[in-house]
Image (cartoon, rainbow, N blue to C red; front, top):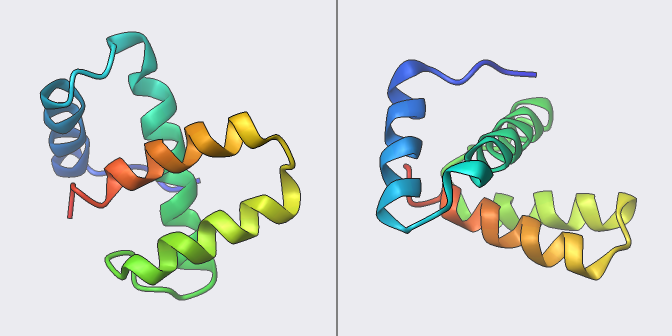
Length: 84
């Protein structure tokens, strides 16, 4: 799994705080950000392209069938796009 740069970690921390995300949830957001970046790297998708977020979520839907988990995950990943 990719290591997030200090700059990206700083931006994500600032954004999570700005949006009132509970500190206990920050690690989950960062985990899914790393998964998304890994996905983009593996399939050679530019991370900044919104369509790739949909591709990532579709790929996860193939593997995960829990609606609640997917809804939560989708919200966490959407927050990632504010970082770029």
